[in-house]
Image 1: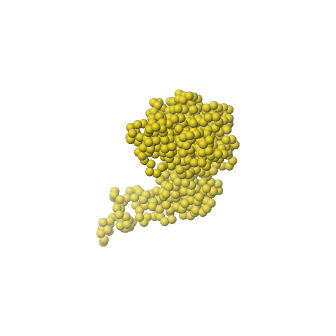
Image 2: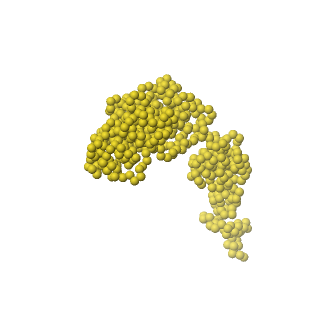
Image 3: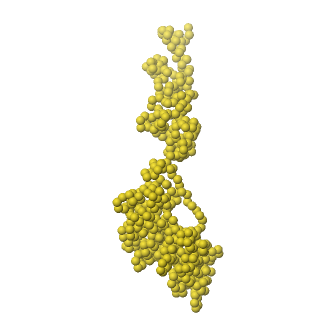
Length: 521
């Protein structure tokens, strides 16, 4: 008799068969039988009703066991992702319930999984990162629920390049006809709003009339000046030739070099040797641009009456950095801020306009959002032509804060929308200093060379010459856009700026101005 039969001679026969089965299973399942003795308790082996195969969500199944049900892990071949025909998924999958991902007209994509690869399928959605045409963020191949959906898995960072499909996915077809406009169409315009275009910065190169003199040396240049002013009489021609052939950055160092070399103040010597407008022009040319602007603003505010046009001209044509430097120099030279001086000398909406401009906080981006330009055009229309009275604050906010390229687009859209030029609308709606100020800001921003050509024409037209305006414009624009101003002047007034200056001025003053002009057209 075998050892097994001796040990279990008192057990029934079926007990022996059970032992032999247990021995077999013990070889296949390491760790069996479970602790707690034999026979196993309820839930042991053989399994009770509902035991084997393992219940749904049993995790993890043992190697070689019965294939797990849906949701088991890991999926076998043919499991996830689902095969063709497995879409749409069962209840709870995709499509989402009410309030979820909006479906397009025509129902869901055909068999083959989501997203469809053929042209004309489900249109792309704008992913959180990247542009149109990328895979939906969190989308799952084969039509699974997008991540972050109610009831779906938590979102995870997009894979692959920004806005692109996840690894293993094909890119979605492009949106028919290009990406739709980001904003709805604006009232008052026919059709929908176009996709947002951007106006690139235009670089036309150097447009000034005076260029750097090669090999200029301030120590040698001050010797020429000293010789021209020393002794009996003054050699004005030498001064004109020297100052008229140097740029501002080459002229300004002469002041320090003159004092270093001769122990005298160059401004003092020039004032003692020169007279009239020629003296003022020479002094202006030897100052830094910001210091000259600060002195002009001071004169415009504290002189006999306020020169409002000078204030607008400087503050609307200078960059933010230039205005901030002017503010610093003004405070240093005159002991009070430019804003305080403006506030004490002006009033009402005109004062608010000037105070806004002197902050030097205008947007200076070159790109233009056409949809925003249309919105601003509508705001200006609603604040002026389209209401009883005028909301000057709205004009102030847009004209003083928006970038110059953006405002040019606004003026164009305003004309297209209501059929009237913005300048004419301002003249209809406003009066006095605020009207003049707003019009000057618009003109200066819309076409700067045209604005300064008009300023020069008015300075020389009629009886007498406004020499302060003539000197300021010629000095400050000679290295900025004098070539453009000359061209506009010729086209607008039928004669060259060179000819106009020659006919309205004389002597050494005229010769120096013509040097700044740079030539005839």
